[in-house]
Amino acid sequence: MEITRRTALRGAVASLGMSAVAPRYCLAHGTLPSPGAIRLSNGFRVHCLSNDTGYVLATLVLRSESIVHDGLAHLCEHTSCSGAAGGMSSADVVRMFKDYVQVSNASTEQGALKWHASFLPKYLPQVIELLAAVSLGQTFDTETVTAQSRVVLQELYLEKYDPVTVAQGKFDRELFGKSHPYARDTVDAEIAKSKTPIPKLVEELRTFAAALRLPANMDLFLVGSVELGDVERLVQTHFGKYAFAQGPLLQLPQVAVTKSYKGLTEKSFELAGPMTDVKIAWNTGACVASNEARVLLALSEYLYTALFDDLREKDGDSYTPEVSFDPDSCSGIFRIGIASSKDPKKLEKRVFEVVDRLKSDIDDRELARIRDRVELKRRTESRDNQALLARLMDRTLYGASVDDLAVETVTRDEMLDAARRYLPSHRNAYVRLALKGQ
Image (cartoon, one colour):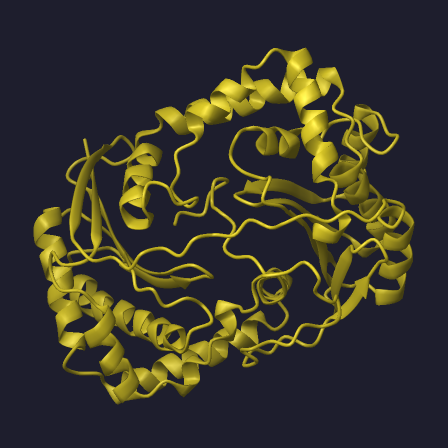
């Protein structure tokens, strides 16, 4: 799945009745310290990881089964960054973002709205106030809705008429299935919503937001130079004033394991001939909480080295191949990406010649190197607030983080078995997209 605005929410917990104390991680191999936690009487939860990095990263997550790509959530996201909220005018909101949030963004996913902020610790009071206002106190003034509906419309037109995005959509529908939230095409519906007459659109947004103000469906994550006591006082003041409200989360269906081959070829106006971008992917069915996930993650690292050595170092057929294993709550996707000037069909065949070799031989020395690279990654990320925030969110919201998978415990025999079970042969059980330059 491509990481874009339209990336769907990767998972959901079974119940909103969870405690806000530090969660019991089922995969406790990472270096993340136990975070401090707060739960307000209205159900709002805070997860705070303090350190001395000198800055703060924050993400506020609102989850609901009502947040789907019908256009309203996307518009709600855009207007929240510039519209009147919490007793402040639209000009006040814009000024506060400029004065107190050094980097800000918001995103819409299938099942979630997220607000992101990076700021200096001295601005914590203003940022907490601002996040509470824009998430729970939007008023949808006509001027802001008018302007932002035009912005959203332009964004959607760029998406609808970008050939690479269109090609990726075809690829995703083959990989996930046409009806799955990860691949459902909703651009036309969102365009139509953005064209709704403004008075009607304002009323629809206000009704939508009123049903979405669910403090018990919200989690605030803070990583950096903050103190839990200060955070508790501020969230109680600004988020605690809203009444308890709770609703169901979006439940994502399981993605079917890829069983057959599908080859797609599309034009790319971003590439010049003879360049081709080849994407290959399949769903293994091994979700993030499965034991196989850790083995497949190690296998993806091993396959990357094998493809790099063959396609780049030996044959010069590729600049740099990309290999990843991306497990979540409903799928476990293996991905290969290669940019090359070679014929894509010949390149595809060459890739699976390398893949097939892994089914008969795994080098213990390379497996040891993978363990060392994983250890280095964990150590370098131990003071990387972005990595820490992502891991904290995954553990809390989805029950597990891919960064916690115990790759260092994978044995040669486990990897051989996984290669034979989960790696397909040429033109068998995977989706291929060849984007050809003009």
